Structure formats: structure tokens, C-alpha cells
Image (cartoon, rainbow, N blue to C red; front, side, top):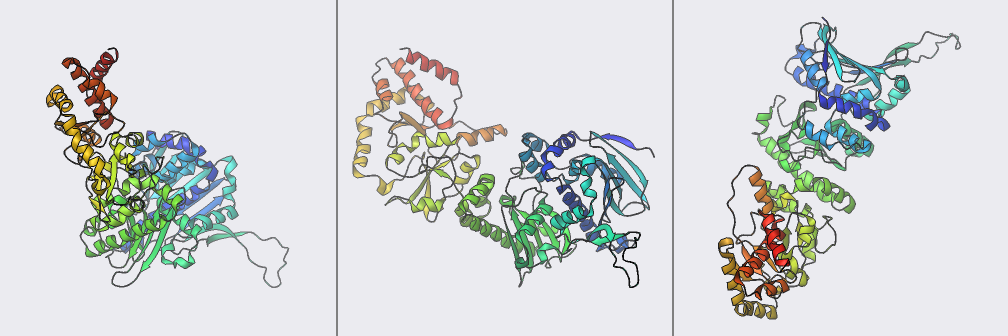
Length: 634
């Protein structure tokens, strides 16, 4: 059969162009990636063989073998795992099958260091072969293939690859790297031994290196006599699954390397937790929080979850049943003897064991994050990456609502910074005497929240306000009512519920304002007509002329309205109450206008200013600008 030439998927070609520069400073990780892939292939076959021993009867002892040839300048990694068919080789090695590929490519910056992190997160380990090789040959035979029916795949990484069916006498996959002239250090057994020990000691499958076997001279033999060197495969790694060891015996560096094997990330994790639980439900968990969020973090439909092992046998990747969606950034594994070996994804959703494990593992992650929060710098690093996903939790997971709310952080008027580092507990600890509410504001941006006119009276009283501008904040605050017995009140609520914080003079002033400005209010009502629900004197404005308020607690903000409209939903227009500040010079200037048609222009201007400040945009900005210019020109 003649080999067929194929073109790489566009995204693969771009990745191959990036790899040499992006990962060159840590080029030896290619070996870790290939060993990791080989280990996964063996795990998959091991699982299938539990119910069909015939699959491995010709080669029952799983192993990964590595052999270098100095003369040929090649490095060969062989496994006796599940193998590939021709179609599988074309698919797995010629395309990136994961969803979110386009989003991934858009996130590439051109910065080698940043791009290497993204590449690692994407899990494209096989392509790291081209860092050290100018040609890669893959020989494979699927466990399900007919006798000797294998595949040969080959590429120089320059946009195309060839593939064909060939006779292959062994089950599994063999990857042959034709090393670049300046990468021949990877034919030295000492270098390979060092890499295997460093990166793959924790893999439960034996990793064997073909190396010279030293034999001491036998009695009577000439010590100086040269012998023909003998080579054989020697197991290099410990071959004990790391999570089965006592946490006391595992070093931090080993946990970090196992995380990279597990996740294909190129960075150390931010934190981890390794626990063995005995009793009614026995299980071991090893959970990690990455340093950097993946590009597809907010695609809730993408596969995520933990690796599942049953009695140390690998069962499935990305088992999403063990953690809630808002913890989808957590990597790791769970190993239990409480589930059957033949458990399926569908069955997982229905078992009591799964529900118990999910409850326990969720609490374990939240406890891990609570511990992390004691380190302000590390937690700030975590929150910058995953804070918005964590905000999904209080609504999704009512049982753990309070624990999640304790982990949330926001900016506030207490700090002159957009850094989100204020917890609800921090806020409560600084509440003014007599204050029993938590005040917050949602807006389009930090600047819009910080400078919102709704805050003027609160700031004047020295009341701290939490500033929120992320899309999820509106949804979150619309679905939670209180924390530690303190009610949440939006600064743009119709009733600020100041209670004891409103002094007597202020109350009297509020009561007299409506009477004293009755004519002003009536003129505004007449001028604006049915554009507004009502016009009232404001009790919250000090420096601004006006603001708009909703009868509700602003559940439907402009940002949320735009999101719903963008999704094709028709949202009815909302009429607002206009609050005006009668002491503001602009309002007084308008009131002094005797020409009612011109006063109507002023009323429109003051109303639309309030809308613009609240919503960040107007439906008809050009008319607003013309009216403003007309009034400015007198």
C-alpha cells in the first residue's frame, strides 16, 4: 500500500510553529509527555482486559520501553497499550480533537513564556516531539485490529504527514524520534535515566531503559580484557502509583510532577490536597488547583472532572460526577473500592456512592481553598484566575452556600483600587455602629461603579460599599439575600434601608424636600410624561443632578438586558423613577427656564444623563448630543 499524504489541521500547523520557541527552554518535557501518553494507552487497555483477558494473552505484562541509537540519532518510546488503527492515527495525530480550538488559538499572544503555558493546558503533548526531532515516525497496532494489521504514520512537522497500513507484529505504539543534530544528548542513557526519574517515577507502569549492563569480572578473568558490551532493558521508575503512598512519604516536587503528568500543564499547581479516607466509604483523593485558568473555563459544556480509579484500576477520564460545575477548574483523581469496575458515566450519576463522594470531595476542595485564603498573595493569584467561576457556587450549591460566600472577594470604596480583596467578613468587621446591611453596587466597569452617583450619600456617611462589575455579579447578587444575618442592599435600590444610619436632621430634610420642591417635581413630570414612571426628590445625591431607580432591586440591569437581547430574547422596556437633586446647579438652571419647550429640553437632558450614568449607553445618543449642544449654545 502506498502511503497517503495528508495536511495537518490548521491549528496543528500553528502549534508546531510555536513549539520550538515556546518550550525550548524546557525541551526535555517532550519525554514526560510521550511517557504520559503511553501510560494512558496502557491504562485504557488494562481496563478493557478486566472483562476480556484474551486482549492481552499474547503480551500480559504492561511496560513502557525507551531505547536510544547513537549512530542512527533516534530515540524510540514503545508501549504495549491499546494502540491505534489507521483512522485513529490520522485523527489523533493529525488534528486537535478537543473543542475550543479556535478560542485557544485566539489566546496565543506571541509571548513564548505565556504561550507555552497555554500549549501545556491544551494537552498537546505528542507535538512536543518536534522540539527535539526533525522527523517523527509512529508505528502502531490497535488491540482490536486483525492480526499484524498496523499503521505507519510519519511527519517532519512542516504541514503534512503520511500514513499507511503496514504489518506490525506487536500490540501497542512505537514512536521513533529522528533527533535534530543538536539534540543528540537524548541518546545518552544518563540523560534519559535522569529525565525518567525526574518526570515519570510516579507512573504505575514500569518504564524501562535500554542500557549497557555492567558485569563484574568473574574470578580468574583478566580485569583489563575488553568484553563485548551487553545491553538490556532496566526498569528505571519506582512504578508505584503516587496517590497510593502515604502523604508523609511524598515530596512536594513529586506532587508537582504528578500534577503535570495528570493535567499536561507545564507549570506547578497553586495548591493540592492528598487524602485517604477509611470507614463506611473508603477512597483516596488527590486534588489540585492550577495556577492559570484554561482558555475555555467559561464554556460550561466542555468536558471536565476527575480521573476515576476503582481499586487502582483506571476507569475513565474527566468524570464530572464528583465535583459541581463551579469547581470545574480542579484537576486530580479519586480512587475508591466502593464502585464496580464496570461503572459507566450514566451509572455514576445515579449511585449513592457517587453522591457521597461528590459531597465529600466538594467539602475537601472548599476546605483547601479556605486554607489557601490565609495566604493573601497566593489567594489573590487564585482569585484573579478563578474568582468569577467560584461566584457561580452559592446559587448552584445551596448546601455549601455560606462556605463559598466566605471565599468570594470584591473591590470596595474602602480601597482606592480595583483589586478584589475584600471578603464579606472583612466588610462586616468594618461596619459602622448601627449598620446592619451590606451595601453594594453593580456596574459596567470598576470606574463606573466607583464613580456611581448612587454612592454619594453612602460615601458622605462613611459607609463602605462593595463595587462589582463582572457579568456574573448581577446574577449572583440577584439570587442571594444575606450573609451572616446581614441583608444585601443595592445602592441603587428604591429604598436604601439606612435605618439608624439616617440622622434626625436628614429625615426632616427629606420630609420637607418634597413639599418645598413640589412645583419643580410637577414641571419635570409634565415635561417627561410617560418616559418615566415617576419623578421624586433624591435623598441619595450630593454631587450629581439626577439618577434613575427601579421599583425592583435592579434584577434586570442594562448589562443583563444586553446579554438576554443578544441571545435573541425580547425584553420589554422598563420605566424608571427619576430622582433629582434640587440643590444641584444644573437642576436649578433648568428650573429657572421660563420657556416650557426649552425647559422640556433641560428635563430630557437631565433624565438622559441619569440613564447614561446608570447604563453606560443610550438608545439614541445622537439626539441627546444635539439637544445638549442646543442648550450649551443658549
